[in-house]
Length: 353
Figure 1 (cartoon, rainbow, N blue to C red):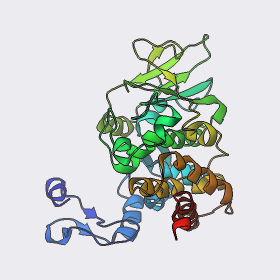
Figure 2 (cartoon, helix red, strand yellow; figure 1 turned 90 degrees about the vertical axis):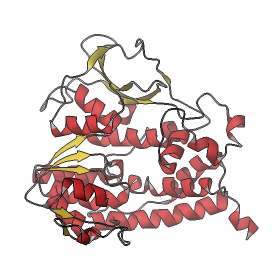
Figure 3 (cartoon, rainbow, N blue to C red; figure 1 turned 90 degrees about the horizontal axis):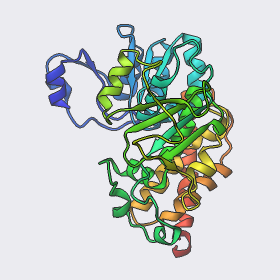
């Protein structure tokens, strides 16, 4: 971080963790940037009047308040934080509409969809279906018996990408794709029945958008997997007709396969039937994913119990509709405690105690 500050010389910086905790470096020793505490400083930076574009990329619910602050200030928000859409979809969209903010997704699949859509204001006019692609993770093709004894080391060994522990486990369970389906539902407004997932091990095509001009026709976005390219596209307001023509059912040379799995039911049985954007039960979609991930990596939860933790937590947790980021953060904390209790029980800790 010190090297980044020396190189780019920002005017302001908010070090530390948004949820609290000390910074691991001391920017005050570097001439130039004005330093603010993370919790307040990040919100102030997101809403500062001297910028028109904010990239929202803080991981998890910790980035929610800054994303909403940028939207409330009428910014162009380049969204790389899926939790802001999954947890606070209704609130985020309402804030953008009220303040005149522009919301542009820059994560892989959703930016691909954005670039395939017709230009605004007729962005969703005539769109029949959105299909997101998934690599399939390290366990593609395995049966339930083979998944029963999966180890954390196996789950972390993604065949194509080098990622952090949580996203690697989310890829192995297909949870990440479930969250992306909800995000697509929030961002693009299509019902869940018209949002699909296919397995594409090559990871060249990131999304397909079905159009009604002729049967099976659509647009696909194929590109190298580079975050800087998507950020550049967002900064340039790219989108609306840049995709290459493709036939989603029989693409060549890409190989696309159905993503339904009776062994890993997360995307099909849970996330592909989301409630309306930001509705109540979606406010706890991410806490059970964090709780079961940590316990699985610690060897305290079987791999096949992961979907059970998510399903039980969502079934039991029905908070009132939240009207602010603070309420959503509090609900997130409550859902996390509930998920921990479910994970302990399914992991057998209650019986051992």
